[in-house]
Length: 232
Ligand SMILES: Cc1cc2nc3c(=O)[nH]c(=O)nc-3n(C[C@H](O)[C@H](O)[C@H](O)COP(=O)(O)OP(=O)(O)OC[C@H]3O[C@@H](n4cnc5c(N)ncnc54)[C@H](O)[C@@H]3O)c2cc1C
Image (tube, rainbow, N blue to C red; front, side):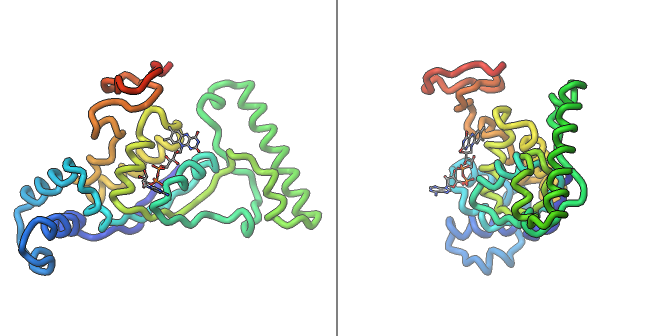
C-alpha cells in the first residue's frame, strides 16, 4: 500500500492555538491569529487543552490523504470512521483489466495456501472478464470480486477524528492491514506536522490503561471490564 498526504491545513499549531486561546481569553481571535507567540507556550497550551479533553479545537485542522493499494477489507474498516470524507475508486464504472489483490502475510508465508489463494483469485478474475466480454455490465460482474481486491481512495479527515481513529486502529487488537495503513498515515502527518503526530497513538497511550477485552500486555488492563483475556 502507499499513502501520501496531498493537502493539509497550513500552520496547524497556529490554527489550533488560536481556537484554544479564543476560548480562554478576552483577546479576539483576529488579534490572536495575527499575534506573535512563543512556540513552546503555544504547544504547552495545546497539550493542556488536549489532556483536558477539550478536543473540538482540533477539528479546525484537516488532512487529505491519497491511499493506494489497500484491500476492500481494509477500506471497509476505514470508512466506518464517519467523521471524514471519502472518494473511492468505483467498481461500477472501472472495468478491471488485471487482477490486483492483497495477500495476507500468513497466507503469503504458507506455500500451499498461497498457491490455492492465487489460483482462486485467477479463476474469479477470469470469470469476471468472461462475464464482461459476454455483455454483463462491470457493476454486475463485480459481485464476483473478493474482499482481497485492491482499491484506491482519497480521504480527508480532521485532526480530532484522526486522533480517535488512530486510537482504535493503531491498537494491537486492530487488524494488521489497517494498523499498517494508520502507521503510514501517522508517518505522513509526522512529516507535515510533527508536533501533532505524537497524539496519533493507540488509545491506551492516552487513557493509561487497556479497555480492550483482548489484552496485549502493553498497559495495565481495565479491571472494571469482566472477562478480560490475554491476547495469544
Ligand atoms: C478492533 C475493532 C474491532 C471491530 N469489530 C467490529 C465488528 O465486529 N462489527 C462491527 O460492526 N464493527 C466493528 N468495529 C468497528 C467499530 O464498531 C466502529 O464502527 C469503528 O471503529 C468506527 O469508530 P466509531 O464508531 O468510534 O466512530 P467514528 O465514526 O470514527 O466517529 C467518531 C466518534 O464520533 C461519535 N459519533 C459518530 N457518529 C455518531 C453517532 N451516529 N451517534 C453518536 N455519536 C457518534 C462517537 O463518539 C465516535 O466514537 C471494530 C473496530 C475495531 C477497532
